[in-house]
Length: 220
Image (cartoon, rainbow, N blue to C red):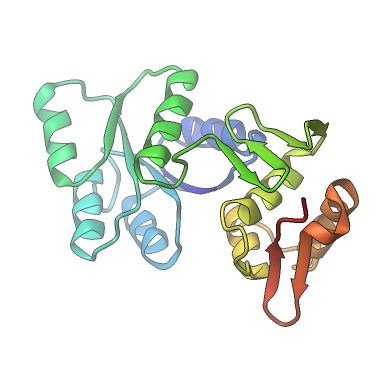
């Protein structure tokens, strides 16, 4: 999953980014509302973490602008304001949830998971393709009941294929969702991870569709 954090408290934004990245999410960060609106408009994010009191464009206006443009990305607002009218304003503007600072990181992660489930992007934490099972909550993969140990990035690359079984997933789509905007390395890094996954899962499970991408198939 790829997230955008729009937060002008740099230490908080960077700390959240480090924590979420360590859990296998691709995270982009910006520190003002105008840049946040621009990035959210041109990039297909899975979720936004958005502060209310932003320089440039405040959080309420940013949410409203995205919703008016038809962008339905899940949005979790983060704010130091704890009044019920402030929360109501954020929700009325189009936010999906509202979290008051200071907050627990565990609660933040639970809210993120809930929003993704609500949007149908994670309706079940356990996904199955043939005899392959992926538990996204526990970050555990098994095949025929045997656990397959994956690194954080391997898990995230495989996840992009498991959520769309039988569909062709392009290299660029995998890069967009697993690596963040700061990545400037070789795009062929995706091929390296696909090769590793084939070795661990069994080569026939991941097909290469020449010129298009990769497809996960049921080879049970």
